[in-house]
Length: 358
Ligand code: NAI
Image 1 (cartoon, protein in one colour):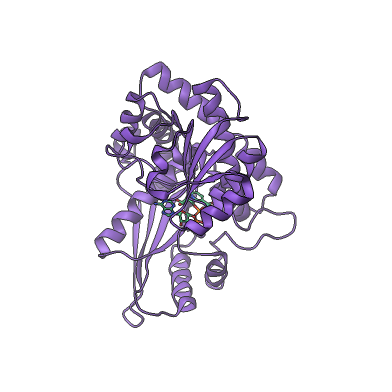
Image 2: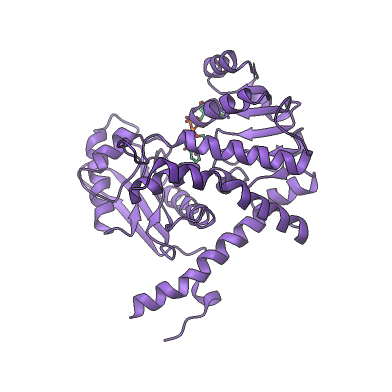
């Protein structure tokens, strides 16, 4: 049997969609295995409220594909997947939900590896672990990778920010102004790293007290969440929600570099073209925020924190390759990153299909 790379690898089609429906408890969700070409499909489990099951599944599909790209470009031996659970609007038995989820992960027999994501925690993953071994994001064991991944995510974003600023502005971090949107786990670590290098910070959060506390700690200026995009800063660092950059917000940006932790920062691929047209250098989100996933992958593989650090510190080199190619091809950086990730996955895909056919 022969396989052609281009016809066998349709990036928009996942390999598997596994639905979770439990009539007794009413719990529901979906696990999407987007690609196992590079290894087990790895990606976190999100707990969120969706208006419909179609909306939930659509989000899981989009997020799973982004995980394939993230893992491929991070050089990890993992494909991409994602789980999304419907957050009940009434009180619910959280442990029962995560036991059920663990049973479903186990049914996939290692094709999908889970971890925490928005709305889930290390404690939830400990419950999942009672039903399956295919889970990471648990408490770290001495000498090994594990635990809260946000400090690693922040380190990758920080080093990427340094690289992007050198390319676009030809300068270092001392005296640079950075507008940070989101004073949560990653935003907090990022502000500490930037403040230690002499950067001047604007910090905004929907939770004003959180922004004020971080500002007091790091010498930053607390900024209203509604206008952080328009802050007079060199760099905009989105570390809150996705889809913050679209055709209405991009014209408001005053920064000339965008580097942040949030997933899916661009509302659409074409928004990368809009940034480029404004000469704003965009560091693709899934490239720079891979530190957390690198930590989760190392935990699953039983690797050390030193190996995590080495992989996180390799992120800027990948970013430089993307910037160089985008410049050479006159294209937006997000489009170049997507092409590079797809090429890595497509190259591995025929091997997998041959193995399946054997
Ligand atoms: P978090 O939940 O700890 O912090 C997010 C913060 O953003 C919260 O303080 C929230 O109040 C604030 N926020 C929400 N909407 C806002 C708005 N419109 N304006 C200003 N602030 C707003 O989340 P975490 O872990 O810090 O992650 C931040 C982003 O990075 C998320 O998009 C997450 O998906 C992404 N990410 C996180 C990773 C990690 O290791 N934690 C890994 C990769 C991506």
